[in-house]
Length: 108
Image (cartoon, rainbow, N blue to C red; front, side):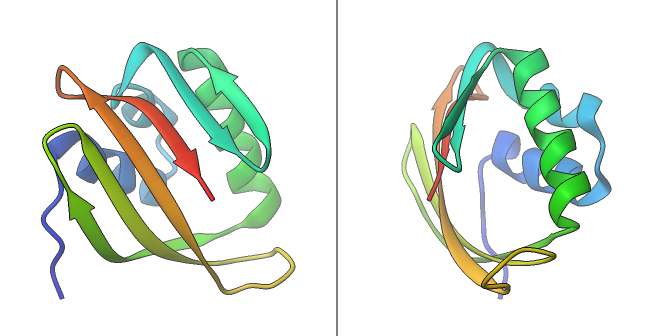
């Protein structure tokens, strides 16, 4: 099944798969915020550090399952398989978009 996603979200997923932090950071606005594991990360450097630590710690693979897309929001259900308790597990990624980039990402 193919999931049609806005360009910034599709680019985020591709950069995450490739572990390319520079490409990943270009998906976000300069003042973007990410909330993951009860922590908040604000700004491009904090987001890059968060993603680098998560990839190194969990060695995960993300598989998109389904998405609900509106003009400014994307809710993506994904399965993560990796080195963490409860793996594999499904999570909701809620993206808020602004000017073609990700302004906010909440992972639950």
